[in-house]
Length: 455
Ligand code: PHE
Image 1 (cartoon, rainbow, N blue to C red):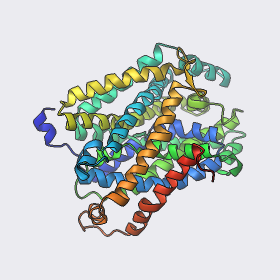
Image 2: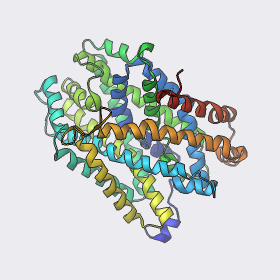
Image 3: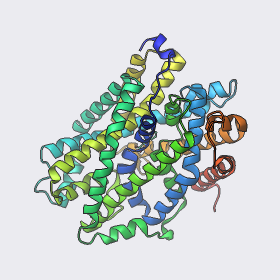
Image 4: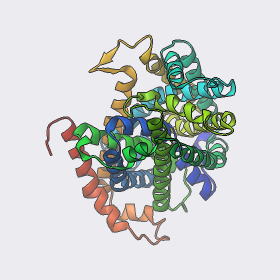
């Protein structure tokens, strides 16, 4: 794209396209890969309840705040704060977001690469005739190897870059629109199979029956991080996307619908995983980052037409990952294009190469670099923890303070109501949440987790 074109900003077109793009960003590996394994490690039902409350009370207000900032400024996440709050320090939020985007892209592409490998395994009938122990071993051997996971990761980053290069309308919107409903259907089918396996009831109990003794300050921070990661909030991915929204988009409805869709997909993934896990005699905290790759092939082997179902599932999961990773890469690319007048092609190439470089270290975290650890965490976990549990919530905290306290209330209201065209039923509630509940809650969870405050 030339400079002239890039000043003529690209945008989304239809209402469904906007919803699909925002939902496409939110729905991804966060719901289907990360949610089940974090729930498993965090003790099940109580975590789920805390996570759901965070989505409703903190997540939706942060998402709506990002929409307000993005559409009002029509800029990338750094430029947005520079435009609305010129001459202040607020653009630091944008810098943090760009760092977070970068880190997330690096480790996200590791898992997306695993997904591509599982597409390949499905097609070549790689699960056939293997029992649970063999399937687990097969995953672990792949995870700890050096060459193959890196190749898949590079393929995934390249795919992301190619879509980013084809521009917003043609790229993001087209791919998001058609495919997500299929993923939903497949997850429903897998859930049905999972809950009808022998001994699966315990899995449902684990997922839905809260045991509050499992909650600790770090589990609560984990629920906050999961909510932010899964909703794509706290780093300006949705500031960037909403900068392409037209004036008539209903921001509140979009935030609400995207968040609900995101939660539904996560819970469905939980229902597809835990009952099957218990039925196989596996412990919920056991899987770690490999959980779905170890459990789901067992389910595919017990499903009529499992061969086709597993191919379709991993392809759709890879596509869901792509519609998320393009929203992550777009944060950095839009920043480079708009702030440094870079050509889109160059910005994309630089971002992809840099992310692949950091990503390499993430991918080798279980194999060649398994001994490089910090506080018992490998490189992958350190980067995931830093981005999801620190940078995103911190970004979210600053974003709600910005919208709740820095911006004039009339400005916020005008943007949310499309300059008065829409009736806003929940304006008072939104204002209360962004000014008081969200900042105080996020701050307490942080202070509590680092041990400064004990509640
Ligand atoms: N929400 C995406 C997912 O669940 C990941 C993501 C995180 C995307 C942060 C953008 C920003 O897979």
